Amino acid sequence: MSNALSAEQVAEFLRAEPDFFEQHVDVLLNINVAHPHGGRTVSIPERQLIATREKVRLLESKLAELIQFGEENDALSDKIHALSLRLIDCTAFDQLIDTLYLDLLDNFQVPHVAVRFWDVVPPDAPTPEFQAASAEVMQFVDAMKTPYCGSHPVYETNLWFGEHAPHLKSYALVPLKSGRTFGMLLMASENAERFYADMGTMFLTRIGDVLAHCLARQLTFLPAASSEG
Image (cartoon, rainbow, N blue to C red; front, side, top):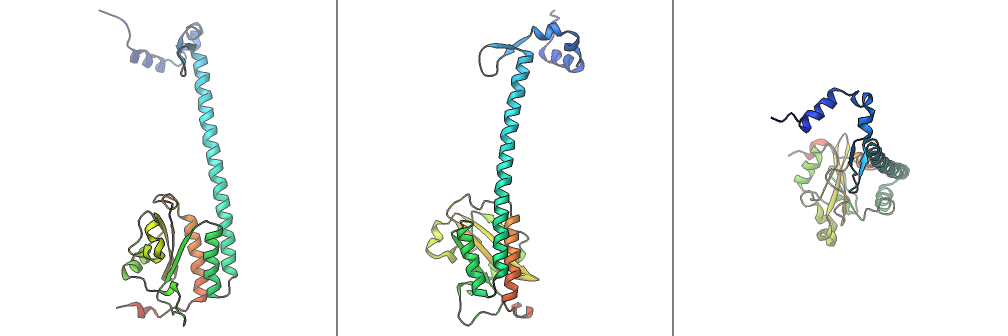
């Protein structure tokens, strides 16, 4: 009957005796293991050094990724701050809408933007922003707690982009609320990865909050009762 220990028994013994190699340094120095990147063998201390270097490289790579992510967030935050100031400076509705469209195109590279309002007094000269939205769209937006991002349009909203609609692959929908929901900001892109389902929406929320605040100063709201029935 063999008295040889199994690999698991050896491992269990070493885990139970963490000081073993300190008491038997000669054993440690004479054990060779396979090199992780080649056929030759190396000592355990050298193998540990190789493993440590690999961990350091992975940590450095992760740190570089986090730094890049932070820098991108800082740059985006600066752009949103600048947009907010420009929107706050607008003194007329037309100026506000034009500033929004132009800034999103030039500074955020969002090629397709649409805004819709409801429960507000439309201007004498109708503009696309006051075209009717379906009851389903209004109910969907009213129930939103955070912006929506994804590859599917909400009901018929993709049709608001006319001839570009068949080519759009991702969407971001931001509710506009000031006491109550009165509209929505819709952005779209031909790039399927531009607005994806799991992306963070903090910056979109900030844009929506500032835009709604500025619009509330320019629009005249209909009495709440007028939207019932």
